[in-house]
Amino acid sequence: MSDIETITVSEEGFACVNQVGDFEFTVDATDEEGPNPNAALVATYASCFLPAFRVGSQQRDHDDLGKIQIDADAELDDEDDLASIEFAVHVAADLSDEEFDEIVARAEDICHVHAALREGLQADIEVYGDAF
Figure (cartoon, rainbow, N blue to C red):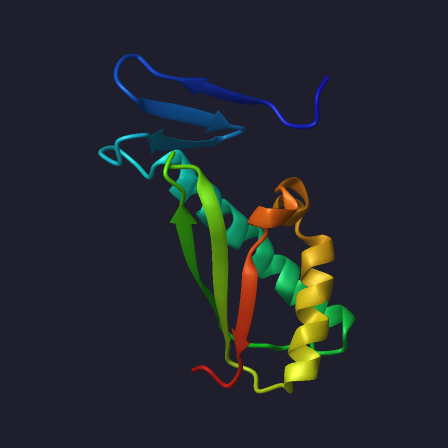
């Protein structure tokens, strides 16, 4: 038995309904019934990186960062493939640049999506403390 099982179904057109355990969501290549696959991947990447950032901060003795928000931007190439991703990480806590750099490095090690992406597509990350 595999570790992750999903079911993806398209009755017609380009929208796909995905079943992951008890959860269901739509991904649509035309952006009509849900986000397109590239947008869904960028959101999934940010959704993995944010908790990894929080865990990385706890492992660096910063237990309470407060609110964290990631604004992700991605560029597509001429073939509509993802060419680059950038994360602007906004954090309520006010830490030094060096502390944030250590947390980012640890989060990159923890984030499973970061590890799964080809090196040239891993996000460029800027962190902004005291953001809220």
